Amino acid sequence: MGISSLIFSALNDIGSAGVSKGIHYLQKSGTTMKLKNTIGAFAAIAILGGCAAATSLNDVERLNDTAAVGSEFTRALATEYRELANFEQFEMFDYRDAQYHAAKGLMAASGEVVAPAEVSERHIDAASVGELEAARGRLMSVFNRDSRNLFPTESAVAQTRFDCWLEQQEEGFQLDHIRACREEFAAAIAAIEDKLNANPTAAGAERFIVFFGFDSVEIPASAASILANAARTIAADDGVVVDIVGHADTSGARAYNQALSERRAAAVQQALSSRGVTVDQMTTSGRGERALLIETADGVREPSNRRAEIILR
Image: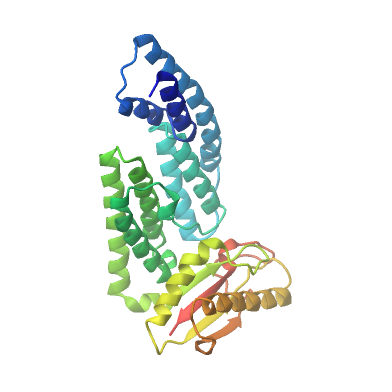
């Protein structure tokens, strides 16, 4: 590969990642360059890296200045993503991932229940995909047992360490970082599983939660894995009864929110039916704004309260 092609590839990498990534690309190339060309290449990387740094810094600073609201879980999640974003921005100079973690942290800080990353979001080597998919499955399993409400801090740590592991595995060259994120995830998820298994009544009936946008009954794409997991669990138990209970936040009139919660329950029922669950197994009802997940005053838009719960008994 010629020097101009190398510089272009490194600059393309820096635009999405960081100075250290662009330099690493050149180092991996194995090409010997004259000193002045080397200096020119690194200068170009530094210039474009500065542009990427400024963009990601805005989001990181916004997160640092944001007071988190919402549930204990979303507040803890915002804190954990803030730490990841600052680490990538100021220590690793990985501006793409600093911006990625900052964006998720800002959503969590607003009270949104942010899902862990999908393995398919990253370019992962084939040998590692199975392990990561299994790890995400464990994470979603404890979430579906209500760990985010029962053990919010531990659940936030488990989610962010999974995202960290996934990021580091994609990069593939900082083996100590891969190991640290993987081991921290393993410790966090094991602790949650031990707590749930030690006191199974704490979690009560098994439940799955689908969250909705404001004034919406449209099931978001992020709920696909939750619905698929619920459908698999239901299919594995012939005698299970499925109660689907819709909810709303306190924004709007009570009568309107009651009807909205019933429509949300019906939307989830239809989604489960399309995944093979028979209608006869399911009941639907709405609680309006009478059973808030996060207590708020009247007239408050609270993302965690806009939901439908799939309860198995």
